[in-house]
Amino acid sequence: MAAKRGFWDNLMRDLEAPVAARGFGTGWFSGFFAILLAAVGLCFVAALRWPALAAMPELDVVRSWSGLRPLIHATLLGAYALALVSLMLRPRKALGFAALILALGATILGGAAVQPHETHDWGIFFGIDFFAVNMIATGLMFAPLERVFPRQAQQRLFRSEWREDLFYFLVSSMMVQVITFLALAPSSYVNARFGWLDSAQSAVGSLPWVVQFALAMVLTDLAQYWFHRLFHTVPFLWGFHAVHHSAKTMDWLAGARMHFAEIILLRGITSLPLLTLGFAPSVMQAYVGMVYVYASLVHANVRGDFDRLGKFIVTPRFHHWHHGIEPEAVDKNFAIHFPLLDRLFGTYHFPEGRWPTGYGVPEKVPDGYLAQLQYPFVRKQS
Image (cartoon, rainbow, N blue to C red; front, side):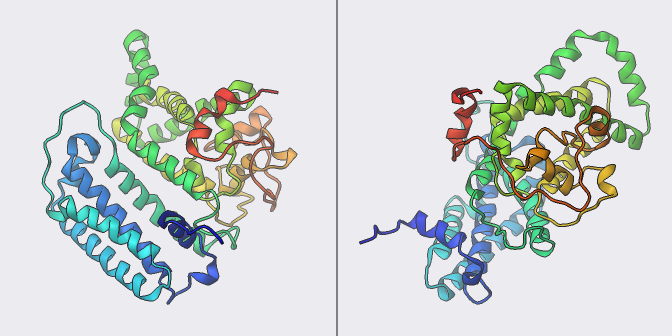
């Protein structure tokens, strides 16, 4: 007799249900969107209740917006309504009950009327609101795009590795303060000890905004190209980067799969030209926002060969070849923005009209966040 499934197993089975079992009228879509709305509402209620611990200071403008609380109220009401629809329509009730639990949790914490709760100021915070905003911005942008213009039409939103990648997305969002503090260390060191950069900072700061933004893209791409290539060349560093390449399916969420140490090192390298050469703060903010969207785009499961455009700007097909499992794709296409760098340094690979047949790495990278976190340190180097 088969073991009885627990609630979590039933929820995962429902989320990963085949396409035929989640059409309109089955209660799947209402259950899924109920969970999404309830989770977003819960994140914002927690951020409003514990602003010193669960909120990102840079998003204070969002939390102080007069329309936020009515929006949270509408979000939770929508979650309740969709959860009830799912419970009525769907034979298995895991989706509806999960949404109800999340919505009830948000309501118990205070709902849209929640007030700040006194907490001990540890001087640290976890970006729960940043996770919610990030998920809404990128998820609502790319999830529909992948359904309308899919490269792999049979690939589902909840494909086999979605749990790990969503957790990576959560960790990188919630740990934004720690990551930022560590990543800014190199540029802080340079700014404190290299006064001769003052003239360069004045020159860059006097450039027109558009020129600064273009220059920022070029300089950060050059820095990231060699950083990226180094992580493919040095065996110990490859152990960290292999985690990112271990994804066997590509979509907008796969770009979030990156070892914690590599995130810090990558952002540290990227921040060096941005923070040491005098770029305007608005240029840096625009670049960071663009990169968040761009990283999701180049990993996305969207079709379009873009043979001509891909020679000048990194497109999804160009970057998919970087993740390709074929021997011809190994150690190719390191550029983040401009394929010209790969042309200059002999790592360009963009066969006209062709996509990789598969993704991943030949070695066995373990499943699960914790196992992948320790993988570089226990990996046997060949």
